[in-house]
Length: 341
Image (cartoon, rainbow, N blue to C red; front, top):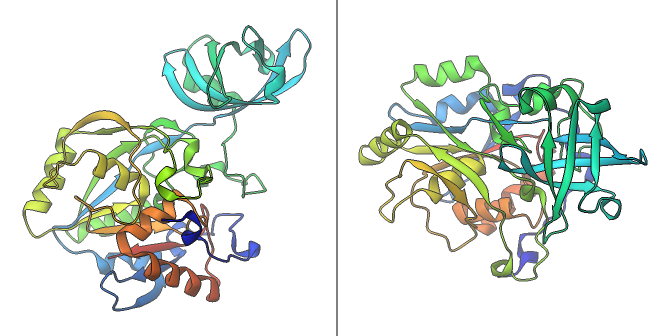
């Protein structure tokens, strides 16, 4: 299977640079997996497609302000640091720019000493392992001095960085938002609950690998990044209960999907617990858990587009993308949404 099979034409002006005025008034393309067509709605119409007994699975990870700016000691040279993955209470895997200036043993000073770090090692991928030194709580420190690590296709920092956070974000740890969830409001979630739909939270901390392009010519040769996930016993019980009855499991986003599919037995039963997943879902994969998927429009040739294609069929999905381009939908993180059922 060729990576180029997942390419499509996208005019640059359709890449959303800002969030819409209201989260739940973005557009929604509803794609039927049985080939019966598609519909064009508003996101808050999604309630009409859910039924009593269904389970809506959300990812309640919270994006951390992982983009930090330091000065190299003793020269004062400016260094940009992007937190990728926590390895221990004080140690993180990071990307640094310019990397050539940052060798093991280098000391970095952030915000006039509010945070410091020593470079401990260089990763195989060219990143740096930093050992941080600080007073108090690390998350509170980076909330003061860090910035949201927006995707590279977003050129302007948003006026309200909170719009790159879901309304139900809880556990800090992601360096990118689970963007399908950005469309929900508290009021819409209450309407969904009022219809008899269970809303269940799982956790998957989104890594930078989400935005790394697939450089392999053949899809099967691509190496996925690892991401940490958690599923509570209560969440597993509700999801498994729906699957045992007449309810459907609707995943909000590719991150929730990867979390569920990583934890599933062959019979589709979800196991509670924690772990790291590098699951790579592309056409040919047999889904074990989910019956529906809410997702944004993804980059050409991306692993996320491959996952969506595995769920609804490559030709059907690419046809929907062509329709979305023709109808001037907004694409990527701050863009519009799809419901695949």
